[in-house]
Amino acid sequence: MNPKHSYAYLDSEAKREIRRKVLKALAIPAYQVPFASREMPLARGWGTGGLQLTLSLVGPEDVVKVIDQGADDSVNAANLRRFIAHVSRARTTTDALEATLIQSRHRIPEERLQEGQILILQVPIPEPLRYVEPSDAKARELHALGDYSLLWVDLFEEHLRHGRSRKGAAYPVLVHGRYVMDPSPLPRWDLPKLHQAAHITLFGAGREKRIYAVPPYTQVEPLAFVDRPFQPEPIVGSCRRTGCRHVFLNAIPQEDGSLAYEISDQGYMEKLLAGKESGPLFGEKQHG
Image: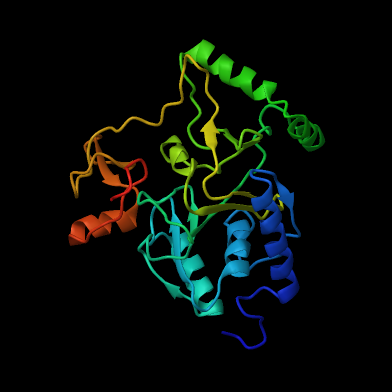
C-alpha cells in the first residue's frame, strides 16, 4: 500500500461522508441519498459507486469477495478485487459465506447470506422512473408523493401487448411499502433474495452520485398485478458441469448453434465440483 494514500485509498473525509449517507439510506429504505462521488482509478460506469462503498466500509479484519455477473475471475472482478486488497490489505475469498463484504455486478450469490454480511451492488441507473419520466426533478416529486402510476401503466401496457412483462434486469420493486427502487440490473431470478434477507444490501451509483439501501428483514416486492403475479425466469436445461437445475444458469452458445448451460454463481459451482458442503440457498428453509 502506498504510504501517501489514506487507508483503503479514500481520504478520511470522503469515507466519513459515505458512511453517514449509508446510515441515512438504511434508515429510509430505498430512498436515494445523494453523495459527493469521488474520482476513482477506473472509469465511471465500471463500478465506481460500489467501489467507493466497499473502500469506505472495509477494515483490516474484513474478508472481501468481488463478482461480476456471478464470476470471480472476470477482468472487472479480478481488477477490482486486486485493487481493494492492495489498498486495504483485506483478505479476499471466492466463498460467499466466508466474505463479510461482497461487491457484485448484476448478481446476488445463490447461497443465503447471513446476518453481519454486507452485499454491495454496482448500479448504472438508480432512478426506476427514468424510462417513464425523464425529468429528475419530476421523478423526485413523484417519489415524494408516492405516485408510481406511470410505472403501473407501463407494466399494464406490457401485459396488454405481450401477455406478460418483458422486463428482465432492473425490474422495479416496492421496498417497505413506500419507495419503488431500481434493484440494479439483477436478473428477475435474484429479486426474491432481497425480500426479508438477513444481510444488508447497499446500492452505489458513482456516475449518478446516489446511494440507497435495503436493511435486513425488509419487505421487498416486485411490482405485479394481483391476477398476474411476478414470475422469475424459468429454468431451462441443466448445468453441463454439475447437472444442477435449481439455480440461475448462463446460456453458452456452442459451435453447432445449440446452447449449453453453466451455473452463473461461479463460487457456488466450484463448491459443488469440489464436493464441499454449501449453505442453504435462497428460497430454502433454514436448516434446523
